[in-house]
Length: 548
Ligand code: GLC
Ligand code: CA
Image 1 (tube, rainbow, N blue to C red):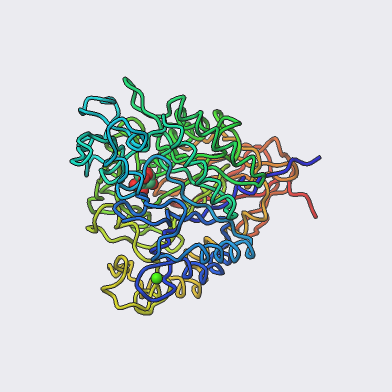
Image 2 (image 1 turned 90 degrees about the vertical axis):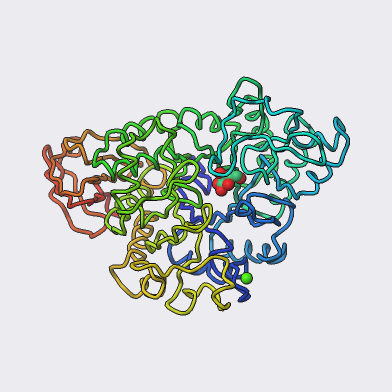
């Protein structure tokens, strides 16, 4: 019997910020109705799932990752009935909905925290968060938001104690030692499961528990709790994705992927090595990283992002060499890419100096590697950013839909917009938008759509086996994706210069070969197959095609 695949295996995930995507009621703030109106665009583009950054009530001190009510919708975005409409409309179009699940902390304005600080020391109400009389506890836990915080402890004048926060001081950490906290958060999972969501992106997953003398990351108790979350999902009986955000090396992220824990995790190390390969023209570390990730967790369980709503993480000094980081920051886009807490605070297109060739190269890899390719809203257009906005807002500006005012994002007067639409030279929404690019056959948008169409027709790219081949060129990575009746050969050139090389295709001797993207027949496979890849060029070949 054929193995049943989960919907998310190899699915293309489109990440969007609801406040910045489309405004349905003209108040300048993107909302759920706006997204519902644009679902046909996402269907047309060919993505399969939509990951929404947090949509819950929040004072927005950390882009909605500071939540005051886990079981409701931010009033500016809509309400539970608009969310129901979104789910129904998305499902009718074959699109899945993934919610952000923030387990580690709440907003400091959450009623639980307000109750905790007024409750007596040692009381059950106080015990919902992590408190201390001094700041010496858990001193081995690094401060993550270094630009904004200098300590993980904050003094509370009402409680007369310090509370622990791995992120902003507006985000007190929940105390997972407390069974009541665990039960509440499991109920949050149930709440959204019962509403019919298709998956959760588990925010900041390593940090749930603390222990003295450790970095307070990925502790055994944290894994034990995540297994409870998984149980709830399994009890529900539907095919629901649990996707971990753990910004860590592969060997520290893979323990979340044991069989009774989470289904997937982002491979941020791969992201770093993709950028490093473009910057250095050398694919050695990229090859190594792909190999390592597949060896530790084979198959499609790694989610593959290029950019997201956060900074571009390039490792904390160990992954990517300092001179390569400098090239990514300065060389590629010829201005000093702003370093925020842990990485570069820019969008993909400006990071690549607006060069559509490297945009295609990097997405071409994502769409052909084993895993779940993640596309960040706007990157399918090569949308720009607004350096100088606060925190990570440069990467979170409104989607460019048309050449009309505010890029068609909203009919509100410009000053009311959630963030300014991009008018920077080269990235101006009047030129760079969905409407214009739909009409240009050679646009980046149409390219993404064509690639996603090809991918849908090639089952080997979705869940086939993966094998890296030897390459005689230091800038060219070559690999195979193969399923029972199909083999796709991929070669990609990370150099700004063209590359010619020969591949040994002896194992398919005599088989037909055809370019996937352009449909050209190639000479039949044999020992020495000479290929030429232009600057940042790549190609997909179908080998040994079976006639239908
Ligand atoms: C994750 C989110 C980030 C947020 C942080 C705290 O890293 O991606 O945007 O600030 O968690 O919730
Ligand atoms: Ca609105």
